[in-house]
Image (tube, rainbow, N blue to C red):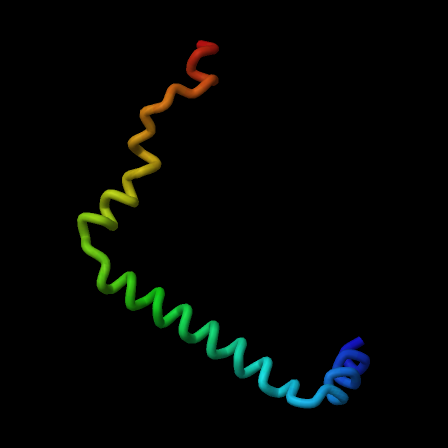
Length: 65
């Protein structure tokens, strides 16, 4: 199966640029993500992490009891 894909890709001019573009997108995304995590304010992280615990809505399951 791989030889069919490899054979087709060898015929495309400039196909070697696509893995490099993918690697750069991956690298810059995670560098940006790490930068955001390290520069985020502690208060914001705490507020966002408590969102699931601060549920003010009434669930339908609670009404059945």
